[in-house]
Length: 74
Image (tube, rainbow, N blue to C red):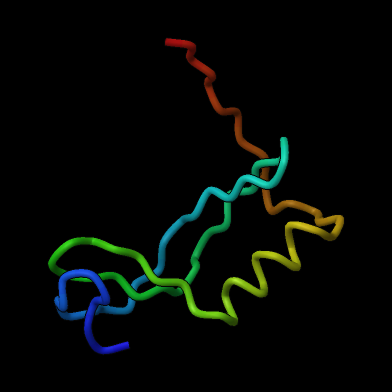
C-alpha cells in the first residue's frame, strides 16, 4: 500500500505489538509487521498477517511468556 485510505498520507512499514480479543480470550502478538500512515497513524494489517492472527487465536498455543494486566472499572 502506498497511500493511506483515509487521509492519503504516506505509509511506512513498522513492527508493532497488537492486543487481540476473541471472546473472553486476549492474546498479545509481538513483532507484527504492519503498515502505518505517517500522517494519521492508521494501522493496516496484511491479509497474511490477519490469517496468522486468526490461526493462532483458534489453536492451542504455548505462549512465549504470560503477563498480568490490571483491570480498572470506571
